[in-house]
Length: 85
Image 1 (cartoon, rainbow, N blue to C red):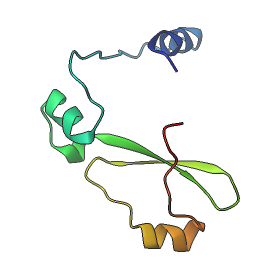
Image 2 (image 1 turned 90 degrees about the horizontal axis):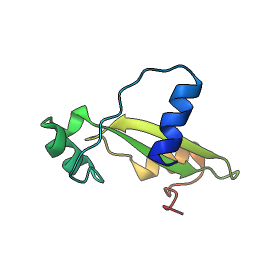
Image 3 (image 1 turned 60 degrees about the vertical axis):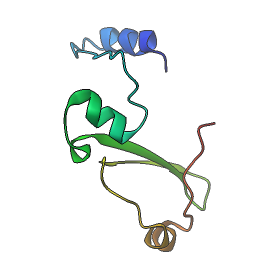
């Protein structure tokens, strides 16, 4: 989704949510935390996984949280995150 499409969606839904644009990269938890002057645990990160049956799920977690691949695989039948594509 582009920034303009997000703005259009917010407007279509009557949402008045500020969008913060930064001059620096926030591509990682560490960069995002530095850019906002907070600890990594205050950053929310989204992790995408494909389940064994082909469905995709998104997990939103604290920036300093880790996924235990062994436990995730035991629960959901897969342990790999989705790629960027």
